[in-house]
Image 1 (cartoon, helix red, strand yellow):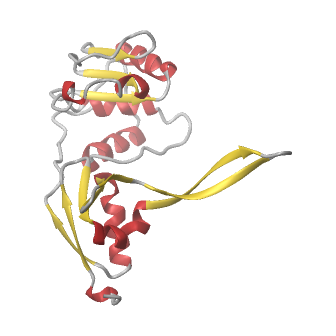
Image 2: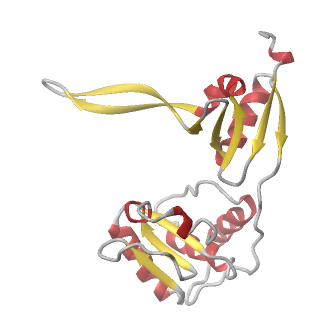
Length: 212
């Protein structure tokens, strides 16, 4: 039907990673799973910007499509604004913090504590702050709240993983291992695994799917 008041879509939360919708419903929420992007190519005299619409579907099957669960609030907001009724099946697994944040040699500032609390409460999101806010300190603070859970940290460069490993060691974290930069990725055995994305994707998913 073309009447948005009568449209209703069904979203099934498969897990904390993906949500599933039918092909028909996927077409309706496509604008919420897309964003404007661009890249640059070298022209004859200068670089030229090429714009396109990037779609962020996780999988595209014959009958169903999946999108990342982190995009669910965006999808629901889109549906509400366009008067599209939704039926959500299932729920995300939220893991509450089991300890207060504590790091060796660090006294958290009030703004850092607020961000750490937001991370443990929301469960997912983006930390946005001014230069000097202490992203690594906040990261370590969040991890210190989950002493009974295994943690995976991914970064794009060896420089970042190396710096993070050294800082965490200084903060008193002991059960850690690092992949990338000469350290071959293998089946994880430590509580905190710090790895470059390029190295971690080489692992067999069966070696870590139930570890983190």
